[in-house]
Length: 248
Image (cartoon, rainbow, N blue to C red; front, side, top):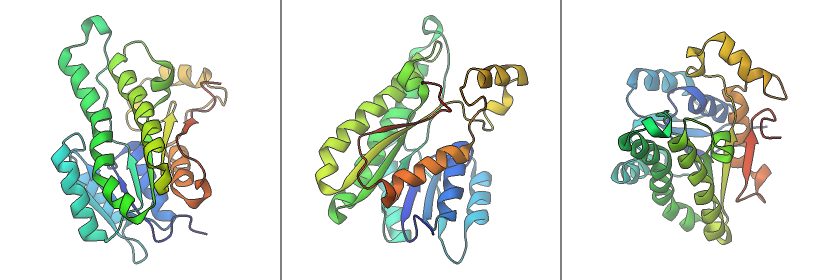
């Protein structure tokens, strides 16, 4: 049974890592996927080519979710190409880690803009469509760091905590129109980014997790399928922790 059959989703920042994993699983569940990327056209073209089939439509768009006008234009383009929209996954994000005493204003502003302002831009862009059709699923990617904080990541933690407050407010505003807004807070997910860490550091992380392993992009993607599908039709305003028990 394909849980997302006939639905269409926008996934921001999907040319690699968690976003790429979400796109793959969504296609397996019968979902049409419009995804964004910032600069790596080669990776985006490769993903679209890999996932396109007779059953589903997949297309990549070079778009900066942190830019309000580009977010509006993206929605217009997606509606023109796909004809409808049911799901928005706000996944695009960056890090600029440093201790507060060494963190520049630019590094703070950029992380807030890309990670948090983009959520406003994209949600604002799709809101009218969702209101008109009286249904829609919003899924915002936060982090375990947004819940408990982390030394050296004051900017990242602030942006990811802000996403939770934003999502809960949107859930209250739009719930009466059957529009659901939820957050996923991943823990230590093993992607291309974590592959750059030494095995010793990675093993140290694993030891601190009750399940004694890092998560995979698929683990986050499966949680997204649940929150995007009708299985979660009575769930909104929630934060789903996909962290192997890190915050238990």
